[in-house]
Image (tube, rainbow, N blue to C red; front, side, top):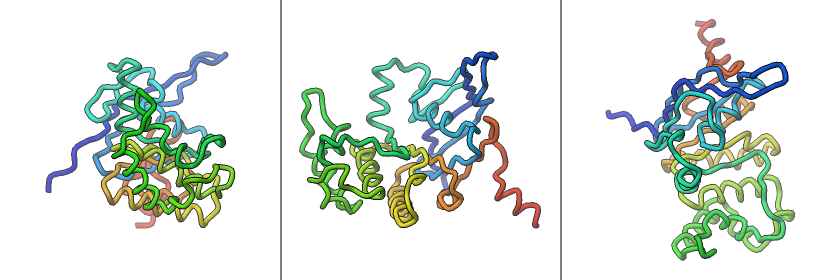
Length: 238
């Protein structure tokens, strides 16, 4: 069976930040391959570099050295306009606290990334959005304001907004960190469905229950990939 093609290929990714005592290295040379259709969990203790790696992989941040190819494009060779286009057409983002505009209705919040140059949303995108909202069980919330929603509902609105432009890969940074257990189950079920339908997922998480849903786990310690504690424990028991 032919393996799926690579969607993301990171080589020697280093990220340093200036500090009073000299440069601080947050990522110390990461090599990572993510195939089309994979479901990847990035785990590790606080400060291990998970969010920084996610930002570099998605094009939100630039590594100090190394290369990242996303959907065949070397991110370091793209100017701001081409990078913004790649993020808008290929990438979706879900964050721990969904940043919704309370002056807009839920539907208008979801459609924000889909507005064209003239401020219009194509009819086919609107139809796609309504199907997404039905699938995520938030169609009945279209006319409400964000402050009227529960945490789980807000997160599903954020997921829907991230999927409006049909991204090939969805990056999520601690998407369940602020949710209660029932909402966590709702969001993870949505992720399972998205991945089963072909969307590639890369999720930063501290929660072992979230990580267990993924097919691939990448554990970071001090800015470097390391064996997962779960896998290490299992190996020691054999």
